[in-house]
Image (cartoon, rainbow, N blue to C red; front, side, top):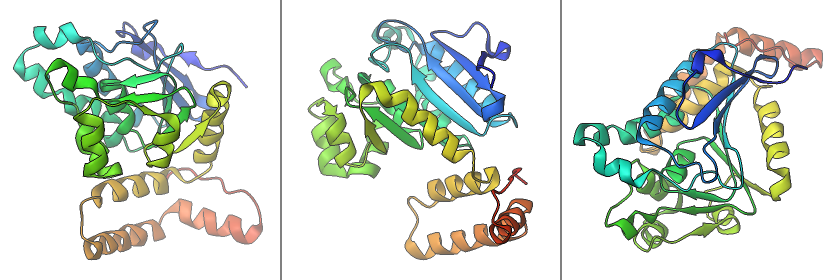
Length: 266
């Protein structure tokens, strides 16, 4: 198996890089600005464009968002907020929401600090695997501000208004254990097992039908605020469309033949 290679399509990125491993249908978006992986203003727009490009890449089925070093990200470049135009600032939430809009599964691998925009972009991912060193926080109150890239809104959907007020209004840090207990984290592992746990989840996800994965993600995102009756109705329509897919036919045949399915995403 070949090692993942830095993708030449994504040169001159500010504070991060992209690696694609076509043999494993995997792409890694890697924050790489030591030591705290501070996220700049231009970097946010670049991250959006990278997720959009990877979403269109048929060689990629799963995307991992991770970072080098002991900390995922201490947050954004504070000075950049004062220098950015109001129009630019108004686009921050759209950029950071790119993992949620992406049709493919996105995994955030978090260790150490995941503060501010580092927490917000992790919340926009589908899965959050945390090491025992992980700390989440939305510290904007200490700057006389509030989260501006969807953090408080997404968090409230996960943990409710009482816990969100406790985190946002007090700039409170949430450790890995509490993040797992509150449903923020998907899984918690020892720090030296974060990469292995991420690899295992990628391997699991690429074994499913890409079409069924995209459908499930969009359905769940679209029905988050829907009534039960509407959600059930939309689920039925999605189920019906998948009924005629090649992947469903392959899955049924593989089940009866007692063999692993070979899903192609059609």
